[in-house]
Amino acid sequence: MQGILIINKPEGFTSQDTVSKVKKILNEKKAGHTGTLDPMATGVLPILIGNYTKLSKYLIEHDKTYIASIKLGEKTDTGDLEGKVIKTLDVKKEKLNNENISKVLNSFVGEQIQKPPIYSAVKINGKKLYEYAREGKKVEIPERKIKIYSIRLINLNINELEITIEVLCSKGTYIRVLCENIAEKLETVGVMSKLVRTRVNNFKLENAITLEELEIQKSNLNFFEKNIIKMEDLFHDFSKITLNERKKDLFLNGVMLSFELEDGIYNIYCDNKYLGTGIVKQKLLKRDIIL
Image (cartoon, rainbow, N blue to C red; front, side, top):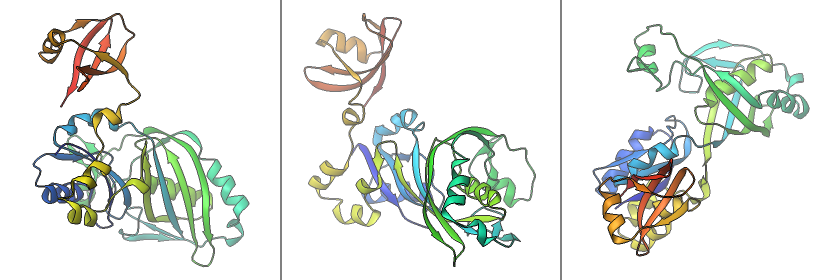
């Protein structure tokens, strides 16, 4: 089997745990994911099956949408509820009104510099940050540029000192860090208490399937026809190039072909059969991804 499945990652699973479970259910040797989710998070996790792992380079740059809850008054070493409480601070309830919170949230819209949390899978010198943290070692964490496209208040629970927000952001954004920064602007501390990823580009939560559904339907061809995403559908916006048999053989063997076309990525066909993608650069077409 080859294609992309949109999995609703369960709480308590790492992204790699989810990939391993999919491989076991489908008896597949090759699979991968795009866009890591923390174990406590749930939601959209695209799983690339078979040779579709080659598509990861086109899927890692996508914008994402999250719904996150922030518990105010506590700070942990991990930035979420799984960590150890390292600080508590009173919450000024007079600050917790829709107008003030919305003003604070809007201040984060736009480009900004963010430093990944120490408890993250970002690699420094070939080693993940959380490995340094567990060993008690200090390491210089490089900052990165991110972008918040929109952020809005969904719910305010004053009694529980918790706010829930929806965030549309660029790749590489750490919502745990954003939650901590929002709490600081509300003149307190905070921790991410819940996180659901509802969208990765055009992959949406309402179209995601659970691991339980996959287990039950693993022999149902109609289920897979409905839920598996093929490369041709994924890249339907790309322009089309049709090759004859001779040029197809040359193309598949890695020979560059002359085409008076603009630079870009193209879907390649021969006799109405989809072959994959090619890249035109300086009037030359070369093979890109062939499944």
